Every structure is written in C-alpha cells, then in structure tokens.
Image (cartoon, rainbow, N blue to C red; front, side):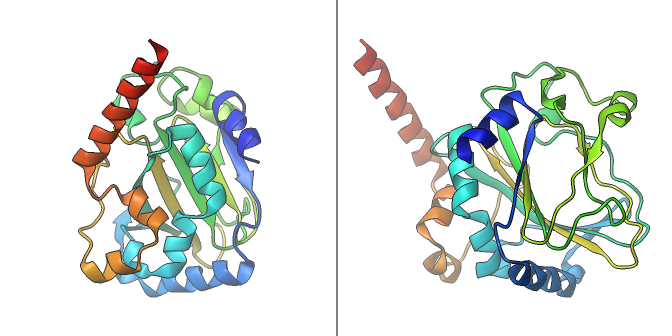
Length: 249
C-alpha cells in the first residue's frame, strides 16, 4: 500500500484513497464528538473550522498515529516527519464552497516548487459518507504536477469529487489543487484534517502547549510527531547528514 500511495502522490493523481482505516462506528463517534464541540470553532466563509483538536483525546491521537498514515508520511517526508496541524472541518447545510488552494507551505511560496521531495501531506478523514450531494471535496487529479498557481478555470475543467465511506481517508500531496464543496444535504458534513510536514517546515500555528498530563498519556509515536525539542531534532538531522557524508567519503 505504501509504495502505491507514494507513487500516486508524487507521479500520479496526487492523492490516494485509503479505505476503512477505522470502523464506521469509530467514525460516527468522532462525528458526534465534533458536533458537540462546535463552540470551539470559528466561522470560515460559512464553514466551521475547529483547530488544534489533539486535546479531544485518544480517538484523535489514534487517527494521527494510524500506522498506515505514519508509514506513508515517513516515506514521503522523512523519518522525522512532524505533525503540522490537526483540525475538524464542518460543512453546514447549504454552505458556500471553499476557496481553491494548495496546502501550506506551498501557498506561501512562489510557484514552481518541486513535487519531489514533498514538503506537506494532508489527510482528509471521512466521518460519514462523502458524496457529491453532501460536499465531497473537489480535487484536480494530477494538479500537483502542473507547476503553476491554482487557476479556477483549469481546476473546474479537471476536478472531480472525492467520495467514500465513514472511516475512509483521502491522502494528498500538499501541491494538489482542491477546494471544499457545497453541502446540499440537510445535515452537517464532518471531516477531520491532518497535515504532516518535513521537519524543516515550521507550522503556521505551533501545536500545544502540552501539559504533563497530556504528555504522560501520549504514545511514543505521537510525541515524536510533536517534535517537543525542535532544536535537538534539527541537531540530530545535521548529525545524520554528516554521518552519511563521511560514509560516502
């Protein structure tokens, strides 16, 4: 799976669907948890964004550290890949579509950034069925290779809607052109968004701070993703480069 998804993100459609990563029952529980925490969110052009949701507990931690996602993130971004963001996105009924974009850090850079090595990987977890009716995310297959800023006309000529079942996840390259869709259903559509980055990419909004109670319950995998000692992680990265260079000599 990892090799197939890796090739798809870099050289194929720019995204890969992972089916049944968690059960429909687990997805439904996270959906209800999200709807119970809407007061933590902020309006984002008619949609609701709830940021930095790690404090919601074990269900979110397990999604962030799912073995299939970590295997792909480490292959795509490096063994010291970091967690950049974890949030919930709720599309209320009849909400407007979101803006066309690529993910951070690419939108903050000049066009022409190389596809490989990747700097960012995003995961859109489906907490309920994603359909054209309730706002399945629009993606433009292969757009990570287009080497230009997002263009609405070109996007609309090529875009398709990602669909799936509760517990599925869409994994995408940070350069993939995408936007949220209109939710025509009578119920809100809920997704959990996770972004992983290369170590050298600092998140727009640092995660945390984390108290001792949180850290004592965090798994080794989660603690590693949080890069609790960033300066040490960078020193370790430099040290590994020096050792590789010495071995090559």
